[in-house]
Length: 208
Image (spheres, rainbow, N blue to C red):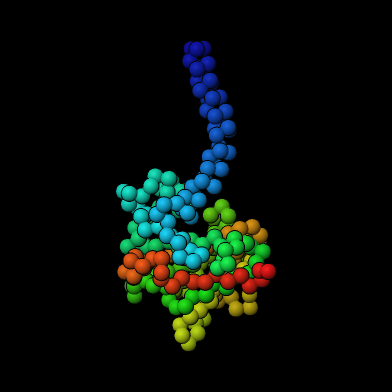
């Protein structure tokens, strides 16, 4: 009986010690290695500030990409159903930062089918939604965006609420953040000409 207790105690202590030593390295691997794979790895498609992949939710999806998707979003749809565009920099190549304010310029409705929809969401540096008093976490085709005569519109991203809050997304007050533009039921051109379709321009309003 004593031997069994000793064996169990050794197993428990070894597990705790191993996890304590391994957890920080897993956190580093998660934040820096897997994230880089999604931004710059083989299969990543760049279009301006935005990046996406068309091989999600498939048998050919690389294992590490599957791991990162499970870490930040639990699951993903195939490209024919939804395309997820991520942006970590503005149109000048500077990292998105909560100490700045941004205008996201859309030339028109994102290229989704008439029965499809789209949304733009802000995530903090840990891939979580940004808490805010307005309880505003995304702007999309069901939001009261103000459009110009040519169909273009602007979504403002800042930590402080602007005067026109209809098309506003709050970001963290400091630190880096990211944008995710989701296109549900994208048009066929998006799948065939992913690198060249018109994507929103991310303009920093107070960057030097």
